[in-house]
Length: 407
Ligand code: HMG
Image (cartoon, rainbow, N blue to C red; front, top):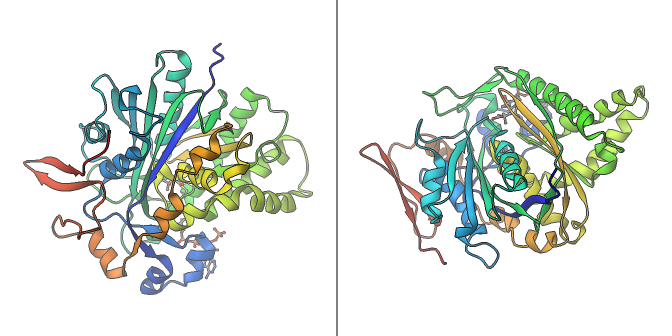
């Protein structure tokens, strides 16, 4: 059994520079805005313009952790890109990202898929690669990148979003050390899927919520059996993060986690409601700020919660413990924990998520609808171009442009 401390050494985020106000969308769809802002708990969503796709979102997130003083490109021995917004059936998003970032040829590169769980799958595989010693001192770059798209005018339309999170995984991590034991649950269900011929996902919405909660119970059962915790998550952790397709889902998940604990310890219902409300307010709600403003980002959703926690908690981070629940439709789920490192506040101070959200340009509903199905590939106006952007398809091949990057 290895004694290596392994986890997240650095974290980079990216979300497109356009947003839609969901109260405005609700009014244009004839829906009570309170259903969206209170019923689902979401206020805005990031919208990917035609010059962004899973490749550019992921590469733009990853470039934020590369080339600085702490990470050189040739230190990366593995690139795992998790997405459910693939751009090709055979050619992985990862190999485009590999080129756009200028990563070394000696770097195992692939794409991972299991709906929203893909990012966590990448994190766990990378951590085990480092823990096993196979990394030989190198690091893994795990990129979770997605554009959540449902049909216009569907009830799921309010749960879209776009963004990516890049995680650097290594030994002696400066941000978050991962505990080696986690709880996993997998079961074949048809709650959410995106057939090969569709851009937009299909979903059995209410059933998907039930599947998510059943998977949470299953992952917790597995975690309890393997980790034999001396304290329940809500007592042991300073923060609890859940995959957040919309913030109300994190509330439902937290209520289920508390009920699981009450059931496991043979308590009746006494005190459960109060304990749920109190722990939700202290451990969950403060870290949903990004999810409320970005929307669902599928594989990246849980890690945007982690980024918001890291950026918001700042100096309170070092030494604190976090519990994370990842759910991917279809389905696979995992509950895992980690402890923030002594240097975590300094790493978190460079994430820059709040600033990125504040500087997005608001779109009208008409612009958003046009972006959903643009007639042609358009290019950004001056000043709107991200560092890495999609140019279009020529001869069935995708073309990208990259502004000069340092080092
Ligand atoms: P819906 O039919 O639009 O909404 O579907 P609803 O009728 O269920 O109402 C939603 C909430 O608003 C309810 O609260 C209402 O009471 C409340 P709840 O009972 O749930 O606590 N409400 C109001 N509140 C205040 N004022 C009002 C008002 N009216 C109603 N006037 C649904 C909602 C989420 C199902 C839909 O948006 C959807 O299908 N979304 C996509 C699927 C999804 O996000 N599923 C989540 C679990 S699965 C998952 O997380 C995986 C996923 O990320 C994909 C992956 O893994 O890749 C999706």
